[in-house]
Length: 96
Figure 1 (tube, rainbow, N blue to C red):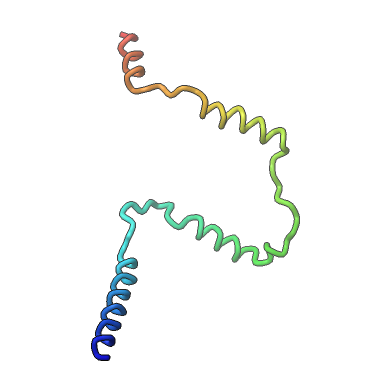
Figure 2 (cartoon, helix red, strand yellow):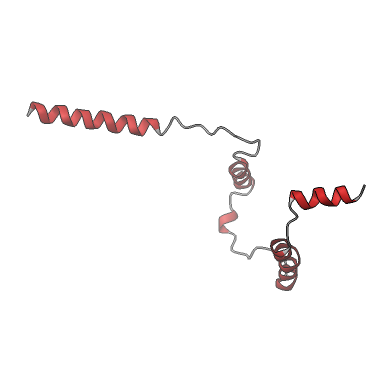
């Protein structure tokens, strides 16, 4: 019985060490925007606490305008070729 109690205490201690070691991690690269979305949502909720009760639709762009923006800007940026550093340096050397 004594051996089982020692083993049980060992596993409890090991579990606590593992749980507490997860709290030690601190992000190395915290930017000024860290937590901005939380602060914004919190501020909006303070300013308008009855917002969840409002069932009106969200004001957005008309579908055809949104579609045009999507195709002209987003899809275009994904499909156009990116210039490599070598080609840019060649273009600059050709200017001499």
